[in-house]
Image (tube, rainbow, N blue to C red; front, side, top):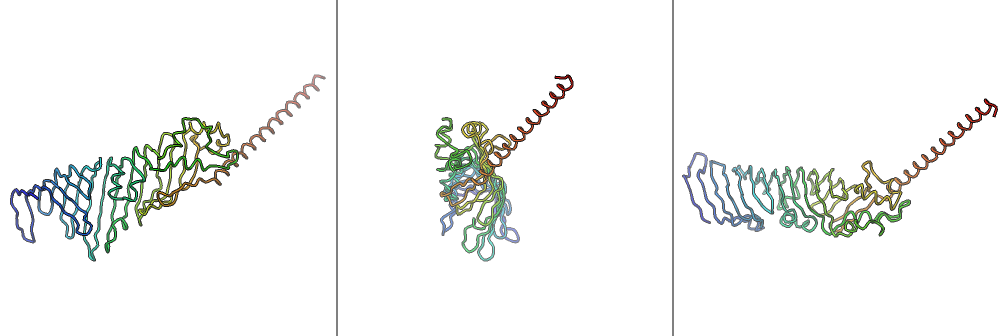
Length: 352
């Protein structure tokens, strides 16, 4: 490590206070037990009392290359805080404020307010959440407020809490074609023995034969507590369909979601030509709407369409149609009787 010192170090009453600038080249700092930390760091650090400014930094953090590292650090009684910290990594940018503090009993507390823009989600998961690295990919955008405390050597994520918003753009759920698994399980409904048949237009073949679930956006507001990420408004959008859901996914890869699949109006019209009773399963936007549950442990999760609810929806539609037809026949009969009465009255009046 090469250091160059500008200005002077001042010894003030109450302890050391550093003023000046350091140029750092090749810094390495790792935890002895976990071997995690930073290495190959170069940066210019300017000191002003208990605060420091990092500029033009580069290096590696837990194996992740960092570039354009900038930010302000401040020394606390048992740790440090950081403000306006920013760097480029994994194809995107992270900006954050927060603090890291050591507490009595050997516990450590982290508070973090990150903003992530256009970061490679798969690469991030591979480094920080390897349980999920083969499940999803795309460009990640996040704005959140998080905090947690590690005690007795426990992982920080076990106590992590917080809230925020997240969006993944241009991504996919890997090795899992969700729309195919939902729609092909819709069987045995009144007038709809099998929802998806070989007679569907050929342009939909790709939709059902893909290995992955491709999407334009996957977005949600979320909260984190007790090892789970909860959301009441998760929304996945594609040109052919959308999915809205509420539920949770755990850091242990377990999940439970209540969701609704809404197919595009064009797909719905094409399907209605194949199965007329599909019209009773259409929402107000002209889309086939299929409620389903998704639960299990990744990668072994299976969607379960609400076949009972769909069957009842079709039966109500058929009953309503039958009543309308009956009432229409009754109206036609009354009209005929009225015409016959008028005709009979005219015949009596004119003697015919």
